[in-house]
Each structure stands twice: as structure tokens, then as C-alpha cells.
Image (tube, rainbow, N blue to C red):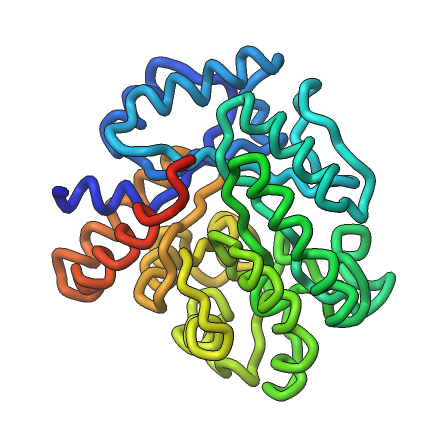
Length: 314
């Protein structure tokens, strides 16, 4: 595999508006490993158009394409008439019905379950989480992972190490969560441990600042966060970022630089949710980091191998 192919493989991109010849040409050139479809991008007006979009980009991808969306149920569902949107909290059966409909459209990754423990109604994740105690959330996320897998889809537990104890949205700014490391292990980690025990393929790192984990970097750019996930929870799958165009990141670090730092820290797949121009700049930044020696080629190879080892559905 060439360096360009490896760099493309670790980027999941979205784009605004309907598919076009220029989008297809860009995809053919950069060979992005993932496609993200979110409602804000208005990529398709009908379900057949959406299915054609995914099929077209998969057709110009030399390797398997991971096509992803957020289908949590409740208020977070894809705007596709053929995909049911079950009320929260969703169980295994409703999850499988939703994920099966996504798979029919061409998706193979459902970005869930939300594995955050909500502190209460003031939590920014209220309505998306499965409870206010580790046991409640752990009991909720396991069946969701099973339900996604029953549809032949990949899953991604999010937002590690926990987005439930803040009222601040990482869409706009970086939440600071002043919990001790013992409290993080006791309160935040059990639901992720449950998702991992049920075979979650990915864990998504949140744009969160936990000084107890790393006093200088946000959790998603910190090797200490990856160590917590790999060492404490023994997670062997792939680590995916949240959208690197969110306010929590870009207010301090440009997306391309954040992507490089995420990969250096031990992440495997970078999300750039909205703009191909930013995804292209991210591609260039990662490639330059490898050629300069800042990002070891072995680290890039490791990320590519983790992604290649995923379920054949990808």
C-alpha cells in the first residue's frame, strides 16, 4: 500500500450538498477510508439518492468504504424515510430494525451507542444517554451493540471518556470536567467496558478536557486517554475521533493539526464531517507529518491495519 493510500484510509469525510463529479473525482484521488452522512450536510433529498451516493463513492474506492451515520433513536436519527426512528431508550430489537434499514441504504457503521453517564437533566447528553448511574448505562449499551451487530453493522461506543457530566456542548467549545481519575474509572468507564465486552468495533473519543487524565491536552489528543482505553479496558478495536471540525477543537487547533495529534496519540480514524477542502488539507497534513518523521510510519500502518481488521461488512 502506498503512503497516499494509507493516509486516505485513516480519514472519514463528509461533504455538503449533493454528490457531484468534483466530489467523485476528489474521492477517487484521496481514497478516503470513510464516508460520514449527517443531516446538516443535505447530501440527498430521497432515500434512493442517498443509496446511489454511497454506492457511487464505494465504487471508486479501491478498498472497502466505511459508510457511517448517527442513528441513536430519539432526537438523533438520519433523515431517511425508510429508516425508522425509535424513541429513546432503544433496546436491541429497535436497534436492529434501525440498523438493518441503514444497511439496506449502504451504510455499515452506526455511530453508537452513546455510553456516557448523564449527571442529570442539565447534562448536554440528556435524552441521548441511558441513565444516571454506571450500572444503568452499562445495561443499556450492551443490547444496542448486539442489535447493531445483528444487522451486520459496525458499532462505535461514544464519547470516551464520558460526555455526560457537563452542560457544555463540544459542538461549540471544549467542556472541562474536573473529576478525579478514581471517579472517572468508577463512574465513566463501566459502560464503555460493557460495550467493549459486547464487541464494539470502535470507541469514539470525545472532545473533552479532563485535567485528571491530561492537564495540557484534550482527551481526544492525549496518549493518556488512549492508554486508559487500551490498558484499563483492554480495547483491541479501532479508535475513531469525533468530528474534527467541531468548535471544541477549531477554537484552539486547526482541524489538520488536530488530526495529526490524534493519530500520534494512538487514534485510528479521523472524522472531518462537513468539508472536502478541510479533509484534503487534513490528508496533506498527515502525509507531511509522516514524511517529516513526526508521525511514525509504523503508527500509521498500525491504524490502517486496525481498520482493515474490522468486520467484513466494512
